Length: 154
Image 1 (tube, rainbow, N blue to C red):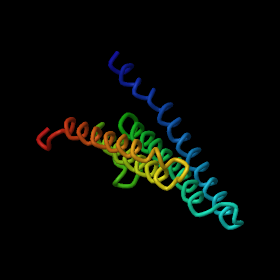
Image 2 (cartoon, rainbow, N blue to C red):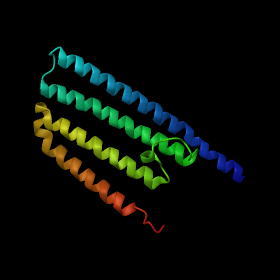
Image 3 (spheres, rainbow, N blue to C red):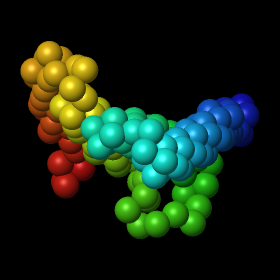
């Protein structure tokens, strides 16, 4: 029975693989969007502000892809194979490591979204509400990370 229950950890393979596939998809689409923006900017279809907004939107998709990649690698590393070859900064020893990495990427995404709203003249009335909302979310994430952080003695 113990062996059977131990094998259930491999059920995480499907969501880990799905996260990695989704990450590749978002990163590819974000990269293609940046190439389209470059072409449009060179052919003078876009002005500076429109170019900035479009690039930031594409970067947002790439960052979201990064979140999915971190989730996929982290799940795989935690449940299936701790010896997977990933950069040191991507090593996940426990769920706290994964949580910290995800919080960092979410904060980066919030910053990109806020800057996109900030430079988009069509959404200038949204700047304060986005800023307050993003700030509240970052503060909440920081409090959550602090409150749930394991001490070094554990």
